[in-house]
Image 1 (cartoon, rainbow, N blue to C red):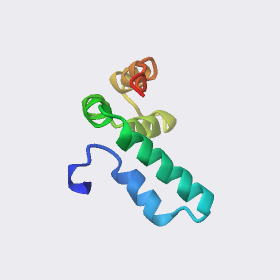
Image 2 (image 1 turned 60 degrees about the horizontal axis):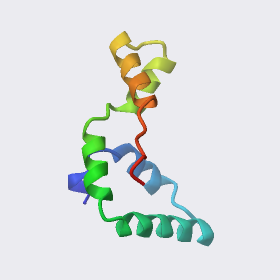
Image 3 (image 1 turned 180 degrees about the vertical axis):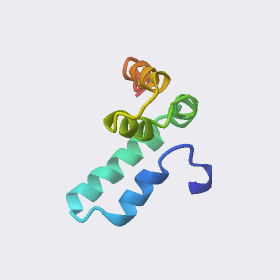
Image 4 (image 1 turned 60 degrees about the vertical axis):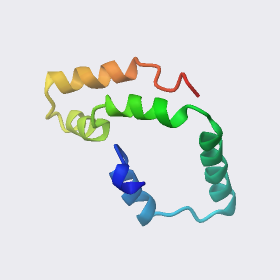
Length: 88
C-alpha cells in the first residue's frame, strides 16, 4: 500500500513519530477506516481527486514564508473552493 501512495508520505512519518496512545482514539481511527472500506466507491473516487491535487502542505509553507509564486497561491485557492468530500 505504501508503494502506491499518491499522497501522505509526510503524514505517515508524523504518525510513526507520534502514534496514537489513547484506546478511544485508536478505536475511532479504526472505525473511520472501516467506514471508508465499507464505502463502495471511495477508493476510486478519492484516487481520481488526489491525483489532481497539488502538494498543499508544501505550497502553504511557501505562502507562510512569503516565498510562493502567484500560480501556486491560485492553486490553493482553487482547491479551497472545490467540494472535495462530496462523495462521502
